[in-house]
Image (cartoon, rainbow, N blue to C red; front, side):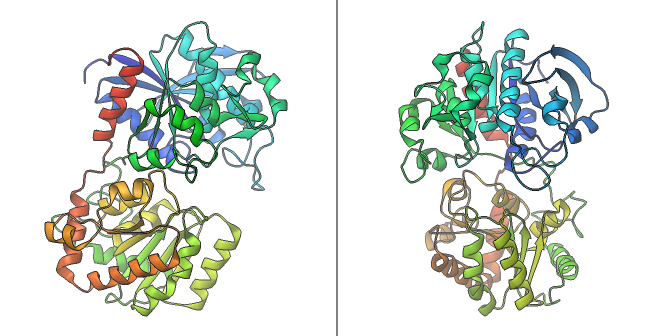
Length: 480
């Protein structure tokens, strides 16, 4: 592989496989490897959570930060899983139980503003001191990195990626004096947001370029309906806003080699998928009825993801003779409702409350289809995995879901290009209609087989998107 012509510091609060709560980690873990093939060298900075430090076999101290938000810190260099890492080892901020953002009791850490301001500040210092050509900051947790860079001693351009505009990192104005930014930063044309401090807003305002994770979502967030209160700012910066789809790591997500499957398969011979369906039914207590199509929902049990709509539309599946497997966690009321649905329909509905990576992969590899009824979805990764694993996605027509799934309409079926089904978002009635349509198409084995084959042939890798990211990064660095 040729030497990189651009050195980029990526900044993220989670990176798969070191630490993960959602799709941000998948993107932050896979994109650097894809960018390397485009001639861009990426080092990724992330917090030194206990799980991250335990995963590192060897580290080198590259910088000490004697006074970082109340304590001493170090920046450690390491390599893991093919990633070139810089880890912010700040025990007073990150050495604690629980998840990256919440205590074991499920509440946000009260000092999250300081914790992730530290991440942005350390990244800016490293970028300037180590001569990086550009910084790529991910989501609100890294949103202050472009702000610190704007007031730094040397100009380093930045790209800010919005993974989900709904999560903005908003804090009271009282945190501002601790951030170490000049007073000029606390302005409407800065990080001030309705009298408080907005981490995501800081990234949107101070970064040289913006992107979000699908073309459709990039359009949706310019509207009052999708802009989450930031549509005016985003419209003002529309000239530097890009929509670049996420991908998945197709080496890791490969049904021909996935050890989590009961039976591996590929597009040329998908027949072994039946063994995965049988294994999933047995594990989850579903009736061993291979003639009943088995559908799956895999994701957060949240309003955004439309988990409530799925439960409302459940009769459409059951009346059509299908089975449903639900895998996820989130809102307590939705968790209870999913468990109740499983209890009310033994053998036909099963729910696993929590997350199990192997079980998710088994579901992708055995389900006849994956249901994604999101009310909004910046990109979505579940539908990409479903395409790759031969489970035609049934998706709401929003954001990246609409960008990645070709609806099985009469014309696309006739042209032989359909890969799944789409329906209008936000309605249990439209979801029910889509499920009934899916069941009708499933009763045409040749049609469903073509949907499956088309999906498995779809390029869901990072390759095309990495080319677009490379162009944007070279552009802000003056090399485009």
